[in-house]
Structures are given as C-alpha cells and as structure tokens.
Image (cartoon, rainbow, N blue to C red):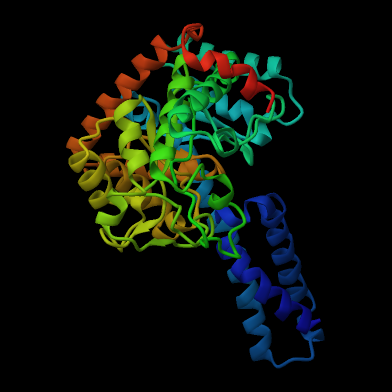
Length: 454
C-alpha cells in the first residue's frame, strides 16, 4: 500500500501543479475531481490506518505531507480560477467593457458566453469545430443572430464573430459548410496574372458562405511562405508546409490580396497570418518556443512581402504569431514584443490597422506567463487578444488586464490608439453587415463555378 501511495503521489503532484495548464484542457474535467478524490482517499488511509503501514514513522509523515501538498495545490489552482472568474463577472462598467473589447474568446458553455457578450466583457467570439459539429447552418445562423441581438439590446458595439476557414486542412466550419480545396491547389500552375482573379473567386465563395451565417472576420489566408525541408517531426498542429500557398512571395502576395478582396466583397474581413512568418520555423508554436532566425533584410525581401503588400492593398487584419524573431527580440514571442509590433509593423511599415494575436493558450505565451502576456501585447500595440482553445484562460487574461489598468501598467498611448482602431473596426462591421452582391462585371465571377466544383 505504501508503494501505491508513493507512486500515486509522485504522479499526482505535477498533475496538481499543471491541472489548469492549457495542454491538459482535455483531461481537466476528470483530472480536477480525480485529484481531490485521490488526495482525500490517501489522507484518509494515512490517518485512519496509520499503525498498519509497515514503514518508519518518518516516511509516513512524508507521505502525509506529499498528499497534503497535492490536495493544497489542486484546491489553490481551482480557487484561484474561481476567484478571478468571480472578480471579472462581478464588475461591469465602462472601464471593464473598454478592456473586454480587446478580447476574442472561444466557448464551450453557451449560457456563460451569453453573459460575457451581453455585458460587454468580450469584443468577439471565435467559432471552432466544436461549436458547429452536428449542427445545421440554420441553427448556427440563429445562434449568432441571437448573440448580436443581445449586443444590440445592451447598446453595445457589434460582436466580432470570427472563425478559421482557410479551406483544405483548416476548415473549422466544415461541415455544415462545404470543405473546399486549399487555396494552394486553386492557384497551382496558374500564371501570375491569373492568381488574383482565381483567389478572388475563392475568397468570395468563402465570404458568401460565412456572411450568410453571421461570421464577419475570417482568420485566413495564410501569408506564410511554403518552405522546403522545414517540417518538424513533433509538429502535429501547425503543419504550415501543408497549409501555405506557395514558396514564391509574389504569388502568395497576389493570392492573399485576391482572397481578401473576395471576402470583403461579401462583407467579411480577412486576416493575414502568422506574422512574422512561420514558413521558416521548424518548431510547432502550439507546443514549443520557436525561433525565426533569418535577418530582417532577408525577411523584408521575401517572407514579409505578402504581409506588407497585403495590408497595404486590403482591409485585412494581421495576426501576429508566437515565433520569436531572433534578429529583433530574443526575450519575447513576436505577439508580445514592442520591438516587433511597434518597431516594424506600426512604425517602419506605417500600418494603423487591427492586429490580433494568435491563440494565447500556446506554449511560448504560457511559458512567458498568461497574466503578463495580455498586458505586454496591448502595450506593444496589438489590438485583439485571442483566447480560442482553453477558454478558461480568458478570465486569467481579463483579470490581469483589469489589475494592470488599476495599477497604471497599461500604457495610455498604445491603449488609446488601440481603442481608436477598434472603434473604426466596429464602424466597418456595421457598414459591412449586409453582404454585397458580387459585381457581375468582375473577372472573378467567371471563375466562381470552377472554384465551387473543386
């Protein structure tokens, strides 16, 4: 029995420490009650049958201390989450709503999401595959319309409704939407002058389908370059080499511009991702810190062409990823780095559009500290913080933003500039709420049937 208690305690201790880590999300519903039950059972055995253990008293005391530590850690982690959740939900005022406007959150609990939406504690939602599985397009459309109605009744800005509908491998809304071939296949073999037209038709079809449901921001297209020999054997989720459009930056530029314009024609904003580029990165940023080692000069003349030119030619958002741009800032992921966001995107490129982080519940950000991450990103000049995977982390990020605001750690200039950009986006969402019918004179209309059949 003592061996069981030692072995169980050795496994339970790190689990209790990490139980609210995003990587353990799938096991959290059973891990937390399992830890509490196991701890109480072990402590009961140790207390009620103390004399029956054939081990020295010193070891028995160590076992007792081990399982008390497990119980204490598990309770502390859960109590901390519940306290932060309570503090966020207990205050709704102009200050809270202004900070909430910076957050886009995924969801599993629709009633709780409605509370956040109605009270202005979030600026937007992310719709993932888990939210549409087994549901019809009509049911999804009604659910989104209900959320927008809650905002309207509360006198709040329109809700950002986002998803990942790239086509191909990443098609969060398929089904019920049809799963299209990836954009890379649509333009494969096409001459340079035809790429933008083909991509426009493809984007217009995506835009029409998304707008019909009420989605107004799509986290697509990829502006990352397709680089040979960059696959990493531990890359299970990024899979950029299977998702990127092309290796030629000019072909990618034409594709992302055409695709973004196609979405915009239907009332949906595109998002260029994942700046500063994941094409050269060999690590999966979901699981590991990932350096991008190329020089700024090399990136400016290759990888950054689709991002820079795409932003100039369209109304797209820019998603900032979690790779570390080694030539600029080795201490933080790009998404949190003032040197990267402000120094390159805002100042060098002169871009004043909306920037959104990749999902914050990813390894480089979690290692940095989620509490600090939201504050650092806003101070760096990022506008929207995405918490799409582990939605419990929303309360951690929002609680820390509220604390930072009260303690003066959110810098006034970037915060005011960001709120100005968000107001502009909200005006744009209102204006784009009614999808525009594609102009029959646009050359892309001739390609629509081709894309639909692929």
